[in-house]
Image (cartoon, helix red, strand yellow):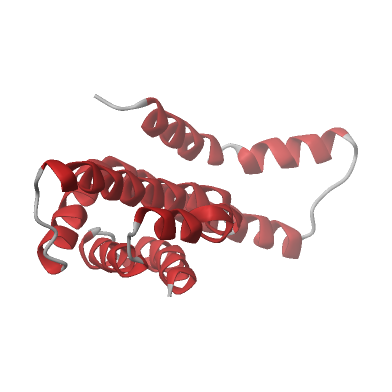
Amino acid sequence: CYTKYQFSIMGATMGLTSVKKFITSKLDGRGSYLSSTQLAQLDQTIKHGQIRLEAATQLTLKLDQLVNEATQEIEKKFLIVSSSDTETKFDNIQELVELFLKSISYALISGSKEILNDIILNGFREMLTATEQSPAWYIYALEYIKRNHGLKGEKEQEANIYIDYAISALE
């Protein structure tokens, strides 16, 4: 069973395969043609987009597992003891780790770090201060996700670019 978010990523992945046909047919219809250099650039752009989408899809399919494991690692490392007082804090941590991972997936899909800037730079630090949480918790969670996401090759490289960006912004 897939979530609405997972279906939208998979649909975007399938749609990329016809991007080149769409672009070339629109240009053909206007009597314009791509040079071999432009066609090679288009192929490269589509390939790069496909890699990012596949990485986002794989991260999304493992989202619950990665979020739960990373949150448990935060709890262990920083000795956050579960009690009625910390139960809410633990839920908040889990929600924010999930927000980070979803944001990284969105950034991969868009090919832009802007969404990470919106989340991390616009309000996140203020919220941490208000809730007495440490950025170190989220840095540790993102480092855990980076080590354990299971991506390989170019997909790993692409995902790690965005994970590293989020980590750097938190430091």
